[in-house]
Image (cartoon, rainbow, N blue to C red; front, side, top):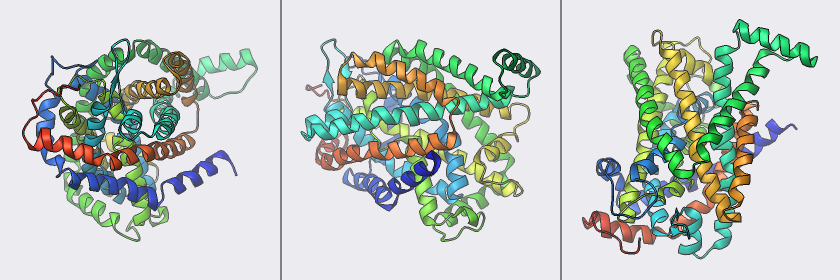
Length: 475
């Protein structure tokens, strides 16, 4: 049994029915326990563009949201959805979308606990996240340690290796047939007495470039990361969404059929197309929910780590702002990606939709001249910003485990993984990411469920009693 087969088995086990029920069940439980906070989504969007100038924190609410979105609006929205469709069928799109709808309540709850239990360091910085909720809210230090261990490791998969691999794959596809690259590879082969393909040398060069650029940004800490993300995220998201809108306009005659296909296959024991892929309910739910979590990270516990650094008057204001991340990421962007892919399956039945990458390229090729560049640019910028956002999550987990001095060593390993991710097998990286996502989510879900009373009490006071502008003196 090789590593690929082993990770397949473990991934299938951790993403079995127990994990799916726990994750989706938490989303649904919190939705109704908090009286459906999703209905305040437009209030949340309005708050995300406001500044609480007199509040304590390291970065603005928008900067914290942008950093969170940078870590979530990534390859999960493009490659992740395509992978879910290729492995779980079009029905996986609905499960991914439902995960986002109900996940808004979970992302809201995570943001609230991040502010409620955050701490201020001796140098004035704010630290928070599930580890502090577990320690200070529940008194379960051991669960906090487990969460940080899983986070520090998971970051290398979901936030680094997968993203670096996506960057490398796109660059090598663009430049692999370039005559200058072929000539350079021949020269290098003659120097080293080797027989490597041009793609190998391209992967190395891309890896070195990615490693350097990431290193320049993360050395500046959360403010440097949030500044870059605040500039990148709105631009890249709008450009990508406009591309999806164009494709849906081209495929307008297939949109309703695509919606019907997505809904019917989500609950079909045997798919109407791609039966060999096993698009039964379990397959669609497994890959849809797994990729939904990969995309929006609701329930994983990553986003509240940066939410804790936000300047906010009270915990509920930041909770609302945090919840918009899942709305933009999954309810809007992932849904549009799923529709684009499904309409393309219907429009081009000759394409093997089990190849998610090929399907995505074919869909965006419908846009004359700029379609492929938009897709490539989207993947590159999404992936790069995700690496930046997740580097902050991993660093905070390491700081909790081993102190501030450990961050420099973590950054060195982080940059090495950036390089290694550019030359690794994508299938293995995705499996490792899925496994670590599940392990990371477990202690976080425990904190959300056991502290749901605190979340409900804060929500009632500030949100449902109309006191959003009230300043919490404990912050």
